[in-house]
Amino acid sequence: MLDPRAGHHPTIVYRPIRPSDLEVLEQIHAALFPVRYEREFFFNVVNGHGIISWAAVDISRPDGQNDELIGFVTMRIIPAKESEIEHLLRYNASRKDQILVYVLTLGVVECYRNLGIATSLVREVIKYASSIPNCRAVYLHVIAYNQPAINFYKKMLFKLVRRLPKFYYIQGQHYDSYLFVYYVNGGQSPCSPLNGCLF
Image (cartoon, rainbow, N blue to C red):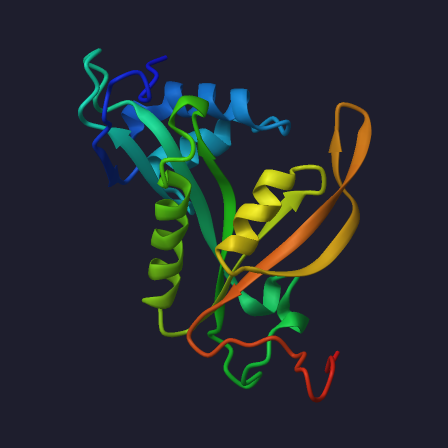
């Protein structure tokens, strides 16, 4: 893989993930994540079946691979009533149409890290969620040992709201997860500094 720090100044653009990205998307997921995803997940991503996604590509690559994925984010829309964080939202419960955006995966290939790509992808997610009037939050899980991801989401002003014991089961071992939430469109935590938690 190309090293953008070796004299190459990348020009990053963002676009939707498409069917031609299937193979590279699978390869990057296998390289970055301890969780193995079914092939159906990747087909759903590249075909937009229930999953929204954005890709990052370096259009200035000298090796001619200027449309190959170097980063991505995948997410889905979840009705608030069906989410695991419904009790972590303060909103009008009589509104049945409240939704959330759940980030499934976010990744950047190693040689393109620390160039602001993940930050730009997360900002796109927040902008997308904010553009949906009845969306109240973006949320996601981070495996407890992934300190760089934990620091990243804190820097992006996500709220760490809970530790979930034994959330992941990977290669015969349980791992805890942290649940992060970023509130949008008036969505709020039921906790306040004055009143404490309401749940």
